[in-house]
Length: 87
Length: 87
Image (cartoon, rainbow over all chains, first blue to last red; front, side):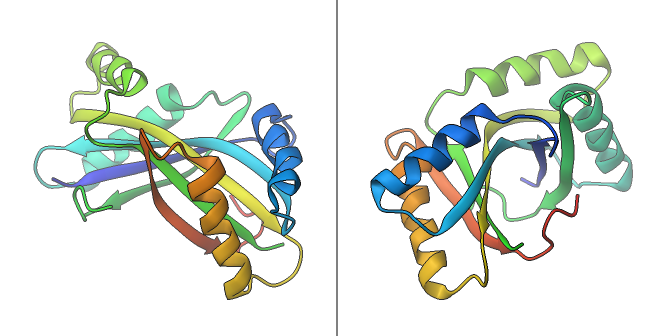
């Protein structure tokens, strides 16, 4: 079944305590390659049938109105994933 | 600055109460196109300099050992995003 992937990240100017906690913990576990970490959200919306342009438009609307908080978050991607439940 | 994107989702057999809450709320807001929703996480790891195969390997290791809980989550993607802070 096709899925629409929605990716949401905290806005650059917004503090991200979870990302901060991870970036501080990484060196203690031997990971010294990464200077910053931001944590956001990834949603998979399952569509029964074909993903039409209209359905994609509805997904963009849901992403903007419900899956993200526009005050503190950006929707960075709304895209079709045709691979079904492949990993 | 290049970034590595890590995407983590709850395993298919694991209940996802956040996704469930969203899929139940969608019709009340006029979204009737989506039969299922799963919520996962998206991380952006900032790399100073070029993303080598070695750094990508370290990112895969961090994704498996730290950014995900292998009992309940799958790492679905570890990929390079060269666009810097483009939205």
